Image 1: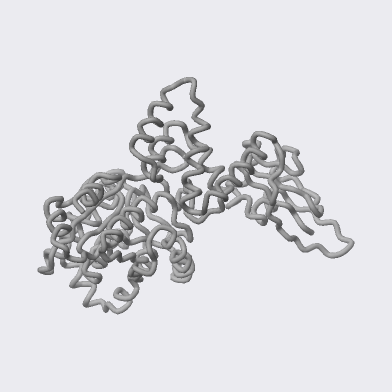
Image 2: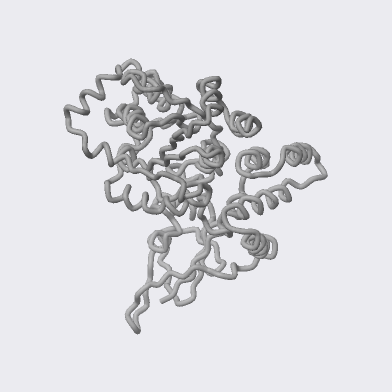
Length: 400
């Protein structure tokens, strides 16, 4: 038990508040309530989330009660942590649709049968304005503006929506409603989680302990992995897609991805560190090993092997994928349909927006039947079986 508690405090953990207090609780034999909240701003949970989910699993394996909160109310505001501007608000319908996909994803890591899953609309939808005023009176504006991201935006003259200032208060209230003993989150969540301790103290309740985990840098190699920045790998993504994305990370990120996302031993980790400094070793081989490890965790070994074969087929052997997704376009019999390249990329969802489509074409990343396209205004004659390609990994076969 002592070794397992030591691992809780050291393995992929940045800070524990207050360590001696939490250690005492863990040794007491009491079944603790361990909280993690997640906003359904996108339908995917990603590998960045897996770090905190795997930490939750450590608590779960010790017999504690994991409480996973789906923030369907906080999700309509959007967590401002680390954001330089106000996030676009999501509708209730969008949030609900995204939330529905979370159950299967959480079950990839946690024992879902032993996990208490709650929506924070359970309590926020029942509050009247008087209740809200009482809750807000527990915090001062000065305290909320202590947040690093808020203070930076304030100094820069960038707007802060009043709703954003409510976010840490709402997250704190979640802790009250589920009687949290411990809250877990990335280092960017520290302020919000400490707000939970403040609110519990002001309401004469035991203060939750806080455990922070490292943040995972996303595929761009700069920002933290984030759904809103679209630099993420979803934990339920198809193996081929996961493999390709992992192979795209920079060499500098290889060690940290192994450390934060896999179950390899400390000895293996140290060997990877040595291999990365060895000029005779190819970092590509380490990425292949990393991709195999991660895909095996979220799918299985066979899927990892097949994804590697498919990757080699496309990138090494310059062949088309074995299974290309199809997109059906309706054309009246006898008609010839011409479609502007920009519109075709958006219609087939190979580009997320017009600006994204333009950028892809300008960068030479778009091909139609293996021919690089340089004019996004060009009218393409749509033919049955035509293959559109974006970048090296995304293909779409057009069926008329």
